[in-house]
Image (tube, rainbow, N blue to C red; front, side):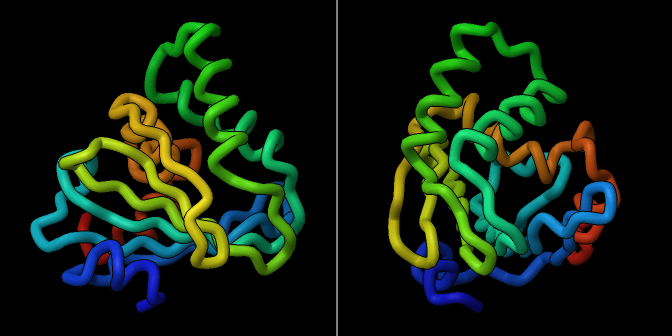
Length: 157
């Protein structure tokens, strides 16, 4: 278990992992750790940690822009809200290089998304709707990558 996972969620158990490839391009490897009692159908009710290890370089604006596209698969997000969230996400995560790790931590008590890059804190977005929809990119049944969701939730179907 990575140090940042143990620090954020000492009782976590490994749930699953997957690689995202788009049109033959490898994008990142994802790993999910969950708190005891985690239920995939109610993912926003339990603590978890999602780590993405990037396999290529991306700018923060590209990551934020794509995240909003994916978040909109789960809910209608007004343009003004989407723009505000994109800006907050661009502040919370840096540009990434191949091999960089972005770790997203979700705690239901704070209903926020906290981000670490290569183990160092880089930002937090304290908005429950943002956090639920952001992590829904991977954990919601409406994800654009159902096979990835299934692999991430392998131990917690």
